[in-house]
Figure 1 (cartoon, rainbow, N blue to C red):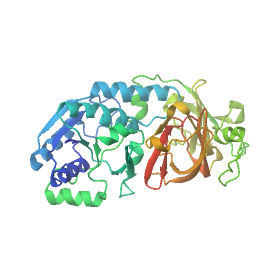
Figure 2: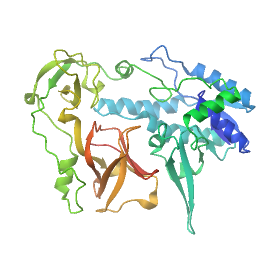
Figure 3: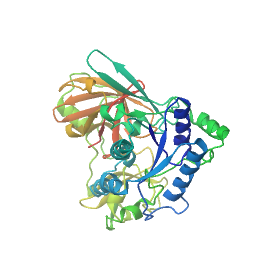
Length: 395
């Protein structure tokens, strides 16, 4: 058994739980990033994380090694980030890090050590369903719903889940802290990591300027009076037409003549829907929020106040090639409709929606209007506490 020991309290307690359960545990520390460009200087870097991981391993009496996965991380996660932001989309690097690094590249390194199982400090759970034909692995939300991280694991496959163990999925964060404190672990009072997975808190425009150039462009303020068309607030009937699905799922589109000039920005690709900071506009009673970006013409469209109708939409669309089913046995057939609970960002309360499977992909039409649907992010659908599938929001 190999556990990913990160230098944080969660993986530290996860390692202790494994030992208590009788596993022969080894620790593997991942070095994935050492570039400080754009990094907020008050944050610790990987050397500090390694130091804490080594202190925990000594305390628990388990061997620890380090694996340098920085090349894989840059290729599979960071380059993807640059590409998506350049297209005017907002990626989720944490989801990609889990799929491509922690449960792929890291798992390969663990396999070289002879491990048949890997463990992490994620707040989620795994259950096994057995039938006469096969074994199915279920990914469930963590018992601590305030810290549940199942959203970030939404792209895992059955093959990846088969080798995964989540030792603290049945614990709450306060319980984890108490255990660490009782054991005298160096990580017991250490703050949780924030920002981009393995990079930390960054000033995003500075970080992105490694690959994306500044481009001065206009901010156009769109008034509340622009005509927005929404469907009935209830979940649509099964006989909804494909034209109605597309209409309900399309993002709001604007032209410069729809509003008025409000200021200048340094690049539309540095901004995302729902963002408030960074526009440096004044003279408004309420803050301006980004309601759309046009990276081709380098224009930001903004609306005044959190209640601006341009921040809300009825549905979203996921292309067929971007749809992923953890529960492959529950994959929807073409023209099938099914109700699920859907989340479009981490820690967002689950939202009732109906999924419509079509030959081009999946449409999700929500029971209520959703604020800040963002292309590039992941929509994740649940059946109760179980993650069934996910996909990259295309529009």
